[in-house]
Length: 212
Image (tube, rainbow, N blue to C red):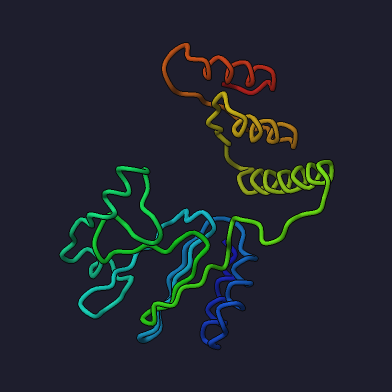
């Protein structure tokens, strides 16, 4: 990982820069990460835009901390969280299944013990685009190529294994990997024998000349 960017983040924290400055710096990070920093009584944490590596914290006994030994102390199920999970397959907001245990949400930073939170990354657009469909299609293609090219470069010494279903998402990823010259590539599909998606996946892999 780019540890220079992490060091700069710590330097910004030491300089007591505001959350907007920290957020703008975090937007330059590429890849998946979660960070916890601590100095004296001050604690800071942030996670990437998809929360690839979850961070939890607890607020109980008039104390708030990221310390795992404190988090798991006397844990109890949270009835509201359990109800949400059973009804929607996930828990809302920053809650978890346990009382007094919370999670840092995707694209969020949090400062302890003040419990100040700041959402530095949001998935929904902040502006309405006036571009036409052709311009938007070209922009999407450019962004997709950039992401896939970065993936190929990062794992050039390893085999890339793509979980291929009959859906459009995995087809797009596999097609772009082929288009952009990824050679050490293989696709895999799992599920019940002879299901519809299995047949489509086999046809896609065959057409793209990818081992499946």
